[in-house]
Length: 233
Image 1 (tube, helix red, strand yellow):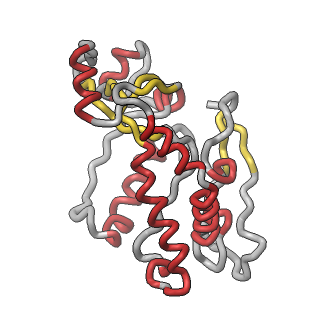
Image 2 (cartoon, rainbow, N blue to C red):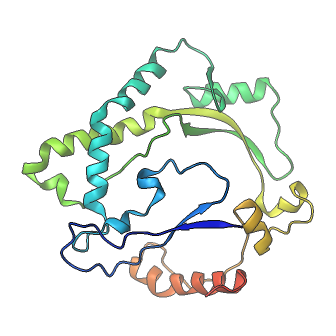
Image 3 (cartoon, helix red, strand yellow):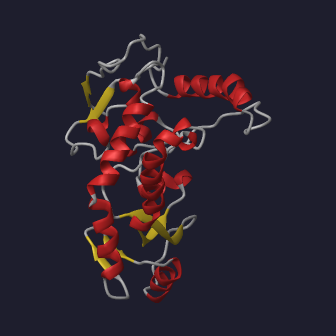
């Protein structure tokens, strides 16, 4: 797959301590529209400030988005649409899971062997959304109580942008049935479809132990990826 590579700034101009954070280069697929993500898709690691991995910049962006009011207008629009299916540019959406499921059944929407037809929730608000982890000091800092209130409200609103859409999920192991000549376990599949199926025998015992995941699972995945993709390192 052809890529257009952009240059990622290693750190914010406000940074006073050189960042040791790895910043992946920005890669845009040729011929595709610009990213919806903030900062043109540039990783927040690029805005590292004194080792915060870009968190300060992300919070600034989250506050700016939450206070501009567009999200509230989208929610109000969805709440004021008459009951029943909602026409969107992505197809018919529904407010409730059961309503969407009944639509799938009434219209005999079927999935190929190994797949399922199911309601899936997708946002209709094509703007970045943010979630500040509960360990962030912002939540416990009295001086930032107003910011915390705004961000908490914004996070609660995230799910209010969703509608349920009738969707068909296919079995990735059967990719060759849908795309003849493309093996699901080949680099070509990754290159053409953006996904592939790979096998990894892991010695990881406890997926909830972050130290063990980093010590055991990360190297396993690195090795599997390097062996799977031609020229991988």
